[in-house]
Each structure stands twice: as C-alpha cells, then as structure tokens.
Length: 227
Ligand code: PGA
Image 1 (tube, rainbow, N blue to C red):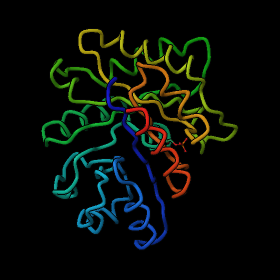
Image 2 (image 1 turned 180 degrees about the vertical axis):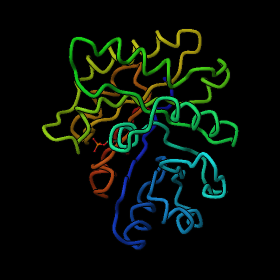
Image 3 (image 1 turned 120 degrees about the vertical axis):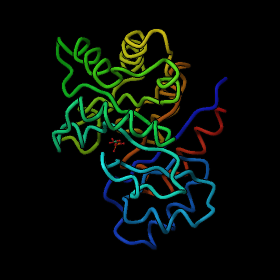
C-alpha cells in the first residue's frame, strides 16, 4: 500500500507564535501550512513536520524561506473569497514548480448541482493547462468540495464514495499522468479512516481539526497506522 499523507492547513491560526510552535512540535510526520508570519521561526524547529506555504506571490520569491518544501495552490479561499482566476492559479502552479516547490493543488466544486462534473473537469483542465506529464506527476491534488469545508456555512463532509467519484473525474481528466489525490473538507478523527479506506484517496488535507492538538494527534495516529 502507498504511504498516506496528512497535511494541515492552519489558515490564519493560531494567534501566537508560542501556540504555533506547540502545534508544530505535535505535528511530526505531517505537512503543515502555517500563516506566513510564523514560517521563519518554525523553519528553525526540528519537529519532524514538513513546512509549506499557503500561497506564493507571482513576483516575489523571497517570501518563500529555504525550509519550505510545499505550497498550497488554488485553495478555495483564494479562488472564491479572493477571486483568484484559473489563469492566476495556473501561473502560480508553473512558478512554484520552477522554484522547486512541491505543490498541493486544490480543486473542487462550490455547489453539488447537476453541472458539477463538467465544472470539475473544466477547473482541472484550466488549473493544469500547459503542464507536462512530468510536471503534473510532481503535484499532489487535494479534492476539496467547497460545500464540505468546515468554514462554509451549512457545510457537511463529503462521503468517501462520492469523494472517490469526483477524484476519478479529476484523474480521468488528466488521464496520462495519474496524479495522487488527497481529500479535504471537514476531516476529523471520526471520518478519516473511512476516506483513507479508499485506495485511490492518497491522504487528507485538514483545516479546522488540525488546530486542536489532541484531535490532530488522533488523526495522524490513524493515518500513520494505515501505512
Ligand atoms: P476543514 O478545512 O478541514 O476545516 O474543512 C479544509 C481546508 O479548507 O483546507
């Protein structure tokens, strides 16, 4: 079985560096995306967690400090709340790869309506436009339906079966290159095992639950027990 991945998207949390250091030390084995202001300090801590940035700027590489390995590209907060276009997401993806960063590329529909399959195909095509097969293989994809993200009002987690259906749509759209796909959207210690029971779900991207140290430890323990 492939090694499963757990990534933590802290968004704008926690409030203090001390809390961030504490959480980072407890996240050994995970990929952690802290707010940018904590990156420098966290990069000096040997916690066994791997650091990523939540975004890159199209014109300033200096914001990515040397300890950073991963980058989140196309998170729904950027696509929907900040209006980042598919074209910008695609440019950032190409730039991140040229800087040697490992992208976790987020795709996902905003609504589960009758058009969501073609929406997903088009978003996937726009996001990866112009990338070679070799470049796509360097990416992880996170399938994150916006309606399933805990911060979305009225959200509920997707089911493993329906997430798998969407993941197959994404993979079929990029058929030549078989990307590795994670699931994200209200993942908790209660449901993580069910998502990862699906062979084609390669790991999870966790938001809210990654900020609760004990809860995240439980999630990591489950993920790593499946390796
Ligand atoms: P959530 O966030 O786990 O709180 O739903 C996931 C994300 O936004 O990446």
